[in-house]
Amino acid sequence: MANITLKIDEGLLRKARRLALQKKTSINAIVRKSIEEFVSGDLSRQSAIKGLEVFFRQSKARVGAKNWTRDDLHER
Image (cartoon, rainbow, N blue to C red; front, side, top):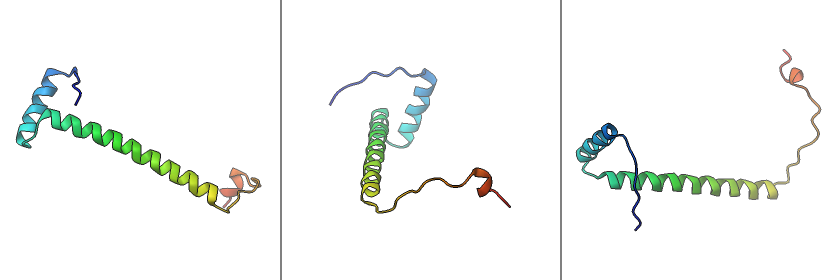
């Protein structure tokens, strides 16, 4: 595993250490989990985008020419 160095406000670090102790974990574990969730969220988003692209390519639906105006849509 690689090591990283972070710069963080001392007061914030003190509060984080206190909270980590209460939750019986470490700052290292909290940071690692946050980075894992950050990366996982991006991978999930990329996967969803690829899935939508495949769906749209395979779809038989076609979009026709725009023959309406905004005013037509909001006409009462």
